[in-house]
Image (cartoon, rainbow, N blue to C red):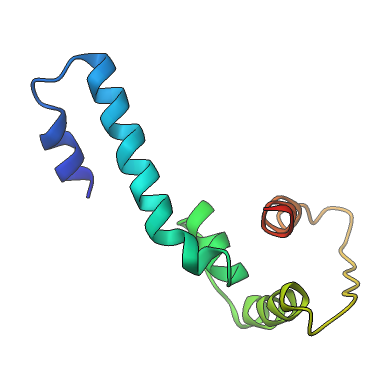
Length: 96
């Protein structure tokens, strides 16, 4: 996709290039939206492409998905104080 974007930018003004990039990002988000709004791990991979999935991620993914679908009423998470990598994706997904 990156090569297509660069090829499309040839001969455009900076303003036109910025608009085209924004349009392509918007299309990519629209294509991803059905999956990332229904599956927490898909959302995490969308916002963090370098994410390395482990078996423990699949377990918490199922819990978050069940919570979002109403199969669970409450999910209590406890994390060590130095574990902050979980906070941003959880907040974004559950609020968004």
